[in-house]
Length: 450
Image 1 (tube, one colour):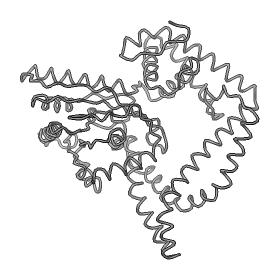
Image 2 (spheres, rainbow, N blue to C red; image 1 turned 30 degrees about the vertical axis):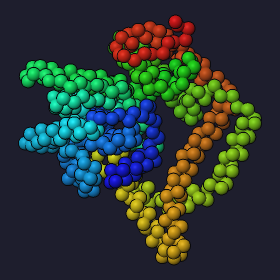
Image 3 (cartoon, one colour; image 1 turned 180 degrees about the vertical axis):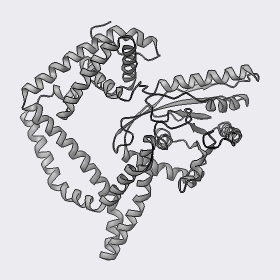
C-alpha cells in the first residue's frame, strides 16, 4: 500500500515537472528482473522507474541518503538497500557484500530491483565506466540456479534542471542471463567482466553519448534538417544516436570540416531562435482562415482564462518563488538541482494547500474551506498550463510576424537551411557505412540511395 501510494504521488509529480517521452514502456516481465540505467540526475533517475513499469521495484541507493530527514524514512519504507561507496565509507566497504546478497535474494524471490551501474550521479555528456556491482549480483543469482533478465533504461534530459523540459525514457531489449556455475578465480572474473561489458553495450544502445554537451544542439539541429529533407518523423532517438556517432567520426577524421559545419549549424540555429522558429516552421504557409481561427481561439482563451490565471499567480507565487530561490542559492552540483526542486515542491505543496484551506475556513467558514480544498490543485495546474500555453501562443505569433510577413528573411533562412541539408545529406552518404559498423543501430537511408 505504501509503495503504491508513493509511486502514484511521485509519478504524478514527475509528469507535472517534466514533459516525459516514453519509448517502449517496460513489458510486464515476470520473474527476476534487474533494471539498469544511466545516472545523470541524482534521485530523479530512480524515481523515473515508477513511470516505465508497474512492478514493485527494490532500489539500491548510496547509504548517506538513508540518514537524510524524510528521504531516509521514505527509502526505508520502499524497502531500498544501502550501498556503501568508498568515498562515503572507506572502512565499511565489506558491508556491500550484505547488500549484494540482499539484492540477489530479492531476485531469487522473483522480484525486480534497480541499480545504476555507473556508481554515481554525474553531469558528463556520456556514460561513465560501468562498475561490476550489477554483474556480481547476477552471478549470485545464476549460481543459485536461476535465470534473470537485465533491462537497460536510457534517460536523456534536454535541460534536466528546468521545469517542463523534455525527458526521453527508452527501454532497451532485455539481456538474458542464464543459470551458470563459473569456477572461482579467473573464470569467475571473466564471467563478471563479460556481463559488465554486455550491460555497458545495452546502455549505449539507449543513451545519447556526446563528446561535449554543446554537441546536443548541433546533433538536434542536424537531425531536424535531415528529417525534414527525407520526410522522416523528427523525434527518432535511434536516428539521433546515429547522427551523434557520425558527428564524432567527422570530428576525428575531418576536424576542419566538422568545425566549419558546426559553426554554420549553430549560426543557423541562433537565427531561428531569434524568430522563435525551427526548420519545420520555414515550410509553413499561412492561410487567412487559419490565421483568423488562431486569433479568435486564443482571444477567447485569453478572455476567460486570464482572470483565473491572475488568481493563480497571486495564490501560488510564494511557493513557486521559494523553490526557485532555494535551487539558485543551494550549493549543489548540476545533477542534483532537479532533485531539490522536486523534493521541495512535494514538501511545500501539501503545506501550502493546508494553509489555503485554513485561510478559507477563517475567512468564509466551511464553504471557503471546501472551495480551497477542492479548487487549489486544479487552479495550480491551470495556472501552470495557461502560462505554458501562452508561451507557445506568443512564440507562434512571433513566428508569423517574422516569417509570415517578411518574405526576404524567410527566403534567406530557407536557402541557408537547404544548403545545410545538402551538406548533411552528403556527410550521411560518406559516413553511413562507418557509423553502422561502429554499432548495432541502423541509420535510415539517405534520399536517393538504395
